[in-house]
Length: 496
Image 1 (cartoon, rainbow, N blue to C red):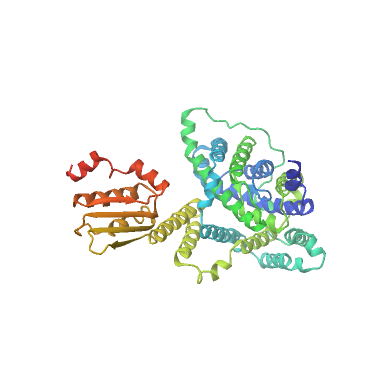
Image 2: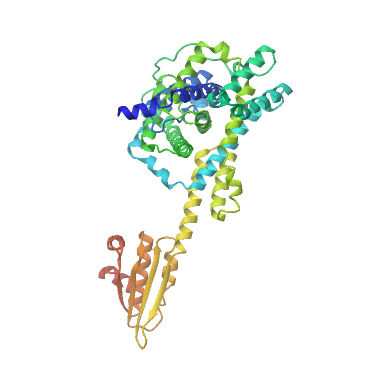
């Protein structure tokens, strides 16, 4: 356990500290912006980001991943805040955490293995596009100074690492923020700053139990929102964990992450913050800035609070152009450029799944809907593909009235019709042998197809022998099949 703590917390102190500092700076405008989207005071988003990041650093299942207030979650809160106010949002956030903890104990994090690579790629590309689109308001109807500062910021981010020694020692996004802030202050450039985004909090958060009636009516109001928030939060967190796993070539505990997200959201709601989840943009910033351990997440949350409460005058002077440059770097780094060239190499079905996921997420800004459609399409394409691999061969012995049907492949709902169509029920035979040695029956639809085949042959007066069934298939057939039940067969053959 001690070795695990050392590895998670103290194996990369310098990298985690610098990366956490960069993330803390980048979290400020996003937390404020997400608060505005949800219709609450900027303090709510900032307190949430601080609390969630600090708590998840201890209880999360993915070291180095950043969790805080997010755009996907804030979009779901708009109607609740508008109709019922902040207190109901805090109550909904608390219930969201409870639901996520239950999801962790039910091991729903393991369901990530059913999400195909094409869906993950579409999710990543869509988020990269959304991150870039979120920066456009800062680049619209502005003076040339903004464009110059943003371009200079991107130049620092991409060129600074090329400088010997020091270029490797300091994260270029942090250098970008510091340099552009000094330039803006020194030359008195009239440019939009963090302080223009909204009032920063000037006190530490305090314990705050939601001031709502504890009755069934309140539960019915917040439950639909809490379920939606829990689902979107877990989905984005699991996706982000998978992406960070690939970036760092390490594994994470998805079910522990589910519980951790729940604990973090409960803590956030009790300190006056809204629900949040993992952030792919900030997680990528963290990883690309050298963050690998839990310390980076803790420092990001801790410094966020310290900066906005005690250093608000300094933080308020950071030009938004510097943070826009950092987020553009994130969108460029997040987008899977390889997926564009792979459009020519990958199967059409894979491309459709990826592009559908991207299109729906970008069009609706609903990550859950895009991923749901992507998973659904991937499942349908997979079922269609596997269904085509089922074949029924037949052989009739010379001068014999017996035919042997050899079934090869997977028989399930997608191949059941093909299975039934492979038999000739009008052929004059005495005996039919259905050899299932190389087949597997998966569901009730496939068992029903076998029943219909056997009973149809028997209605024609043919003796049917079913042989070679494996143990798993036999279990399903014995449980749901009726062709060996005389009473059921009599009903079918008798026309009842």
